[in-house]
Image (tube, rainbow, N blue to C red; front, side, top):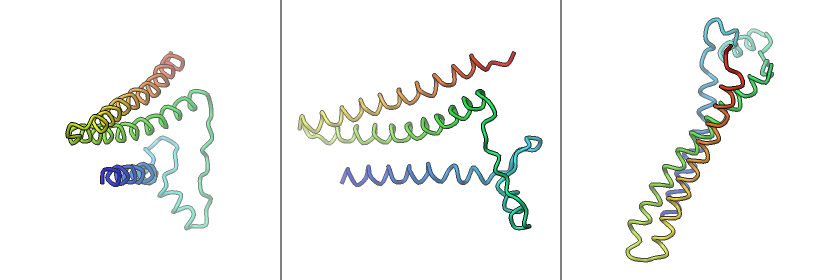
Length: 138
């Protein structure tokens, strides 16, 4: 039963992770940014025009920004999974009923979830710190 619940949680989180960038891509580009929104691409394509394909990285600063954005998504996903595993581990510990093996498995799951959240947060933080130090506005 617990395995089914955790599988459903993981599948739901994967659906959100895949769906969020798709819905974010549909948002109009901010005025003055020079970007082309997904809506404008569809309009251009419908009128026989050319769809914008400018996704190149123009410099090292933009590369670090993109890495930081990707790690932001990874951190958000890891945080969601980590909190879910904290809850599942806590429930496993509470319903162990004196069984040392099941209680130990619950404690291990809680510890691994916390370690995973910390590692994901550190990865994002390191890139953000390097990005702010190296590419600080003069």
